[in-house]
Amino acid sequence: MRNDTRKKFNHSLAKVAELNGVESAQVQFTVAPAPAQKMEEKIQASSEFLQKINIIPVDAQTGEAIGLSVNSTIAGRTDTSGNGERTPTDPTGLGADKYECKQTNFDVAIPYAKLDAWAPFADFHQRWTNAVAKAIALDRIMIGFNGTSAAATTDRSTNAKLQDVNIGWLQKIRTNAADRVMTTVTVGATGAYKNLDALVVDAVNELIDEVHQDDTDLVVICGRSLLADKNFPIVNDASDNTNVLAGQVLLSQKQIGGLPAARVPHFPDNALLITSFDNLSIYYQKDAKRRYIQEKPSKNRIEDYQSSNEAYVIEAYEKVALVEGITIE
Image (cartoon, rainbow, N blue to C red; front, side, top):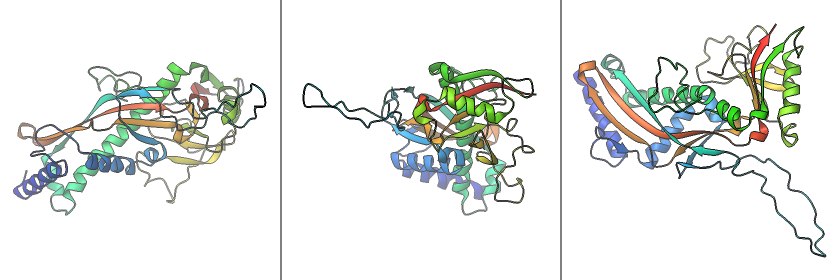
């Protein structure tokens, strides 16, 4: 690390400590509410997808889903002239899903060479913070769509898509709403469905509750293999897709089964999820974010250790349809 870089690095350490009300950022500390919220905003700002779903702070590490969706009707009438009594209904379906925030470590190593490259810029600290925020955002998305378990010790070499970090949205649907999952589907001339449109229409009609079937915020979320650019041109402000960044949501110019099609990063191949973006949530436990920063000269880098207790939540299973194992002839 160059001397001018060290000055900026030391200034950043002092700034982190000051913002969190601690003497040193090089000893583990609980992140203060204000910087914790600011970091959450940076994480969301780095990903269009995370801006579309819910990122919610919760007090308890375990509990019941907050219930952000309207899942039933409430209009009715009761004759109260006799023994009849009006009975109110909770339309949110509170308690439909349970959550448990699992400690998730987001530990980042930044080589001295990269810090030296950032040193000439006035926004040195912001570049460091933004790099960490972007990495957290992309990992959250990957876990949400691929996570199947929460191992005591994770193994990135055998779980390249972070399958063992936490239980993601799709796994929660498989476990808690198996009747809303369709598997091993063939689409084509000899298949059960002649095209993807027919598949999506049937999935909505058969798997999603009637009260949600006509919701105008339903979308078909899928990956790049299913939503091939040659068949479904992508809507993009640029003349081509060269400026599309990881973490963004790419909307197709065409619909599938009358619903908007959205290509989302890290979504599994040959699968699709029908729901609304705001039916997907990430809960994180307030006052449970931990951090410490250390220099590692033996590795020519600095290390930024951060952890957060997080859970992936489906707000309303009544509003989901998951189709997996799609084969297109």
